[in-house]
Length: 98
View: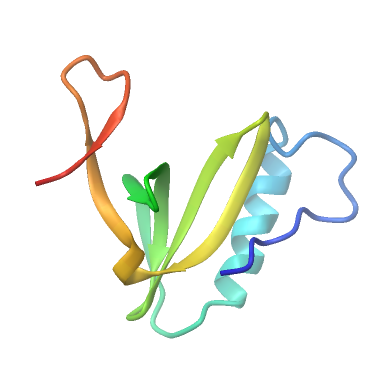
């Protein structure tokens, strides 16, 4: 799926700008690939072996977010690619849930 772009009006890093994150989430919810949208508390997931957080879902897709390279990323992914994850006892890395 296509990653959602950062707001054009912001000159801050999206890694540190809560206003950009909020605006990006609102835009992503408007562009949802299905209805109804269910908002979640961010839940740890893996997508193509990448650790992320699920923040919303529809019948067919999951909205995931993650930070990498000091940037915030947000995109809709097909639900069959997203797997729940749980923190390890050390809490340092995510692993796929059984």
